[in-house]
Image (cartoon, rainbow, N blue to C red; front, side, top):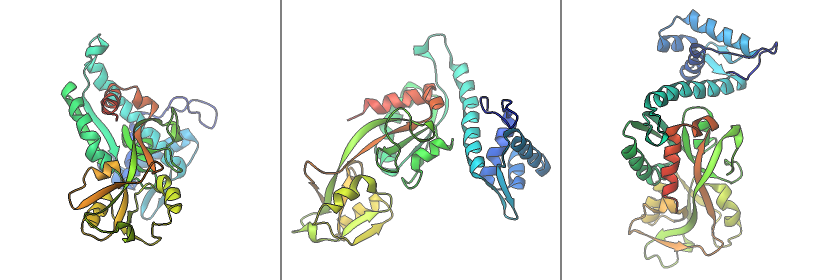
Length: 309
């Protein structure tokens, strides 16, 4: 953790093994479980955590009968630890793949991606197909993350993903631009319009109940919804957009869905445009400054941008 400073102003230098201990305690929820995972004794894990806390000058974990839970400072330290350890992995892979000709450098190893469901289903596969054709050594690891709370961007900030696909620009979302929360870098990949989807052949779909799901990007739609006097106030909630689409096809209601979700529409539903003032959301990538400089992440961003629009 070069650049950080301890209580006496000296640079803080946590060793890789100390970083691994912090991550293991956070992920297992206790010192004993972390010790088992790492092949250490419980006292060695405890000693390492105390040493890291002394170097940083803060308490990193709340100890209790049920285990250990990161404090707010601990959450941040663990996120940095994951990101630093990931850079060690990337350094080894990129050094081994260096050829002296940047255009011919090889990329290998895991590439961790977090994305919300419809993006993981429709945006990532073609980009990953082209990426792995160019760099067969890359092993994509895709985690589907609900866009609730921190969402995909939170996985990146916490060091659990190298790149995330997230919604950008609404209140509570990662803003598009060079640096958002936690210093994350973002870029817009597409803008998708919302449309009305309703049971095929229904004579007056606007009379149907409104189907919605918790993950829906309310920041992009709620203001627009409030201005429409035809949308009913009562809604039926579903688990995700795929379930909403299925329920609409069963005649249980109508819904307002973004284009990525509507790619799964069947003949059981009809899609109606909402006019020139329809709500639109931006979907983009989220990464960290250090990950953005790695060959694998740069290559994936290129492939995602190649299918833009």
